[in-house]
Image (cartoon, rainbow over all chains, first blue to last red):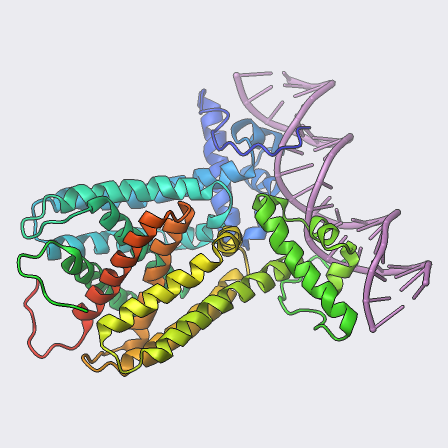
Length: 217
Length: 217
DNA sequence: ACCTGAACACCGTTCAAGT
DNA sequence: ACCTGAACACCGTTCAAGT
């Protein structure tokens, strides 16, 4: 037995054959089931395998460790959210800043709400080792999309768009998460929409290149 | 042996006597040491006890479980950050919004940077069970402080300050965390300062009650 | 080629026994 | 009053053996 934990998240087998693909999916779905059922601590390789109807050994044929199992599911989840944002960004190219901000905020919120349970179950262990890497990939994709969109704005010019997009993305995540932790009641979500738009729009208005500078400080 | 985990975070013994207080502190310090030394997975009750020069049993006289140990350290860390922000908020009462925003952002960033290593080591397991509760207490304190300060602003009026302060706090955490995950290089920190100010100021400018409304959408 | 499940190492937690 | 450390339950992971 190696003393160092295998931290690689790469899967051991891609669904090479017909039957094994079903097993693979069953394990992934069982993971979400177990996660939704109980606390994060209830997530046990044995329990997942049991729920998937296979033995532990089978699980370890496809995933190198428990974390990889969790990350696979998280990757899938984040991917679907990012995809929604990317779509919106494409559609908004050439529009005015206010339209862009509203559309992106809406699509982000909606994508999250579509999978509220999954998202809440998944964000508990988000800060685990190896998870940051996965989250970073997702946020980088979102940043790239937002960056390119903003570069095409018809009514504003920006300096340092890489930084601006990173601030926007990371600033949006916190309030969204907070609202979801409170169960995302509709009234609060409505308020959140308005405030996130104000946050983004106010920020962009503040750091955009002004022709006439508004004195401050 | 009870099958349910003891999730209570309450300490079992407050430093009742002279000697035991030293033991208590030793365990807390050992926890940070172990955390700073290796990965989060290296944090083991046995290892912490060993480093503190006591046996595992002694550790469990003071902390009901491993999580409580972690939370005690995190609480201390977050408390010091919040305290800095609270101080600044008091000092800024009655000032203009721009001054408030700059001062609060600075104090938040500085408080975090003062304990950069600790903060980075601590935020790995932040999303663990029971941690959210502790984080919530800290953010609620920060929100209350910011809310009261904003209510005294000389140049602006706000509606729904509870919501506004919550958005501000949770929006600031993300970008800050991202920069710290990158090691917080000075150049990036400088940029962060500017961008967080712009984020807060732009947002507040956007949602404050206007006398003359600037047309949007 | 894929699956099984007993076996191993290790960790959180306890408790009878020590001083 | 405080500490010890062997003991217990349980979990992640493996691997020889099965089909």
